[in-house]
Length: 205
Length: 208
Image (cartoon, rainbow over all chains, first blue to last red; front, side, top):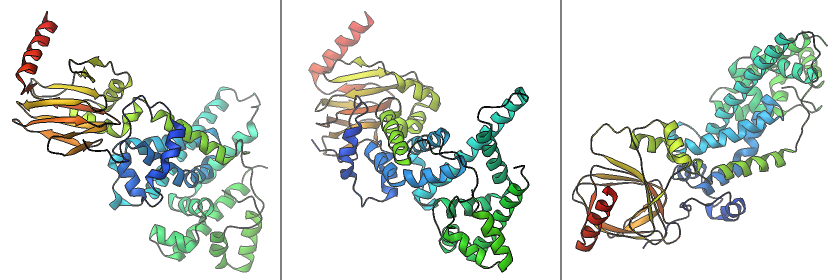
């Protein structure tokens, strides 16, 4: 009878053994690559999911917060994202990019979807009762402003703002990650900032 | 998207360097004003920990315990993924005649006739006696695993394909047992005369 490796996890009835998972994370190994973790997730290895989360949740969450703010929606996006990664681990192809990029691209996309949905929701609310002052009108207005402002910049311009603000990349690092010249990164940044400035300066104070 | 601190991020400092002095001063002044932002309700570390707990709790139990296999089970059983999720949500395990083995038949959408499909759960260290496959069988291991008489270890994520005529026996993992999804074109035949007799007897009982 052979002994199963660490990638094996128990037959059901584990329950939410959070402490157990945490205690065993060492077995997943800090030296294990992200791609290896995802490969192990595809075999149902929950420890690999826990390690991947520990490694990247914070950075991914910062990208999401940059778009949605530190809201409950941002938390939903992060949770849905890692659940999606767990479910779709078998479809990950390391030839098509790094795991962290795989996570961040999906995170930004989901966050922007939430923002659009929130905007539609606010518009519907206002349409329903235009006369009544909303209790959190300032905050909703800020969200709408942010959405409007982000809509005004292109996808490429938004990307450099998020990479620079949220992930702290320099123009050179962004150029390397995006595969474009440094000058292009700088010009996209300046264009995006100019558009945001024009947007906010056109807003009533 | 505007920073709330007076110190601009490095990439912005770099990007603004190429502008004329007046343009740079105007943009820098604007960027340093800050914009309204939603207040942080919970420190990030606490949020991350809470999400982690929920995530690991959900992926510890059915059906999401098996989420990495939804797509492959869907292909194996030729049924939509939504139906796979529903199937795995509350599995009505039934005791099999062999001790330590449970089974549940699955009504699949498989196009070929006479196919037998189901889920099987084995307790740790179960010996599945020597048997012959009359037709092809495929086992997708969902958790734990087993070792066959050739010493080959089959683990979660593996697809074990047994062609017609295959004769073997196996032992489930001593710690984790095994859970698998299986599709076969006919029932197996035990090599032991005693088990063949018992099998006929059990089937007769079920028909009665």
